[in-house]
Amino acid sequence: MKLLHIDTSILGQNSVSRQLTALIIERLRALHPDAQVQHIDLGAEPLGHLSGAHLAAGQGATPESPAVLRDLERGRTALEEFLAADIIVVGAPMYNFSISSQLKAWIDRVCVAGKTFRYTEQGPQGLAGGKKVIVASSRGGFYGPQSPAAALDHQESYLREVFGFLGITDVTFVRAEGVNISPTQRQAAISAAMAEAAQLAA
Ligand SMILES: Cc1cc2nc3c(=O)[nH]c(=O)nc-3n(C[C@H](O)[C@H](O)[C@H](O)COP(=O)(O)O)c2cc1C
Image (cartoon, rainbow, N blue to C red; front, top):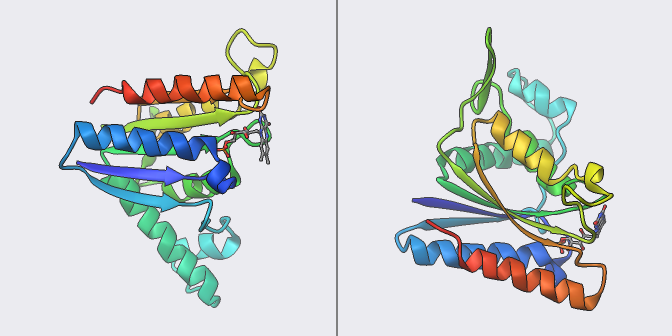
């Protein structure tokens, strides 16, 4: 059993999603005592944005820049870790109605044609099925289906669809929302999400 723990918040010690991913991992370790856990902190050490040099390297070119070479190697490792994982715990803060650019940079490395999806005559086919994803979602406001801002949720909706595109349909959200509305709401949202994390099933 391999667990991949990914943090992507830029808020360090003040991050809500980091608190939640830590608790979710604690819960999963209790459920799967034999699990190997790999932690990647993309807030602290982001992957680079995809560039022309990255794409050219994918076509066989050798990049001149040592920084791009290192980043390509990290991207390859990110893909291998993703493919090897049975459960992936993703810290996903909402920034500007979407995910952090650090998480997007990671997604850009794991959405690879021929590895995690392919196009067929019947349409796209995900190749990374059989995994479970647990997303620790934190957001300042409210974006539930009944809220006036529901249409601005390009965070959870995007993650559900992109993992689905890769063939992963078992996606669970542990959510703290409204955390910037007031200190009382923040504490209530975090406590509720923590209680949910503590109840996660195997
Ligand atoms: C750069 C930035 C952009 C944000 N954009 C939004 C937003 O569009 N909608 C929202 O509800 N909250 C927004 N927030 C609040 C965060 O969603 C909230 O602080 C959440 O806890 C972030 O997760 P984290 O604490 O793990 O970083 C933003 C916060 C930051 C720092």
